[in-house]
Length: 390
Ligand code: GDP
Ligand code: MN
Image (cartoon, rainbow, N blue to C red):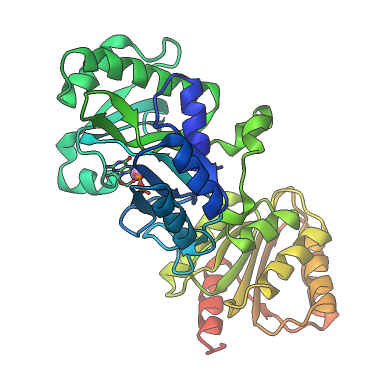
């Protein structure tokens, strides 16, 4: 789960990480009032669940409260399109108004889980401000990494190594070490999946300041962080993903293609997406209906496809282990009875009660395309989506 920058900065402050003075505004008038309170130059920043705002015009400098009000009115109510969003962008309904800082250098620090070592990793770079992916491509030697043993935590020598590596000197070394220790503490305490400060500014007067803040949280640990859960801003999410959750489909991710997929098991769902790609098509979604199934869950998955105007064809690929194929088949029949299904549906069934499932589908008289196996299913759905039904 993601949260907004201003919320991440508030959490960082609680953990002793310095950020510019500022507050969130929902209206231009509020933005003006905050700017008056701060006094002097401010930065008005669009609050969206996406980075790349700077290049996309989402960060505006304002010399006076009037300019802050104007900047806020230009941002609020519009949609932010950055290279991290789709073309439709995300809604801007709040802006962060904060004291402008004089920057002498822009650094980068983050904590994440390294999927190779399965350990927390602290990363640092003196090439902050720009996307870390770009630095990784252009100058990988500028990204410094230390792996953390969670049993002993982040050690001061590791902080010094990273601080010297970023060419910090004097008091800044201890300050950076403290800051990274605090970021690591925050990461562990709040079960983050990513804690990132980019840029971490070295100000003109030599202080370290988090100018941007990004915290992502491990969804599986959210149950023990009700305070974090409450920060969630549904408006920032894909409408289809919000809809899926409301219909009890928790494992749904919207993708770019036009083939709807309904699969049981996340691994199988990924394999299905790969195979569709391999056969020359592209999936509109990742949808894992879970291990144990009800007909209602299947009907709701079809509601998702009907609600998605991009869908040209659907592939149902079920390997029943604990899931029962007959239950799935009944769900498909019910979906056809309840909805006007105008796209071709390719069905591949295998596993527990498969014969019963096939009998139910055959006797129902619904119009579907049967697939012999996994590959045949992917091939048929790709052909169907192209309008060349086999
Ligand atoms: P992002 O583009 O979404 O990652 O947004 P950031 O919050 O990182 O801001 C982008 C850039 O705006 C930063 O790299 C800074 O160069 C600049 N910026 C942000 N806040 C300030 C500020 O207070 N003062 C100055 N001078 N520049 C700022
Ligand atoms: Mn940034």
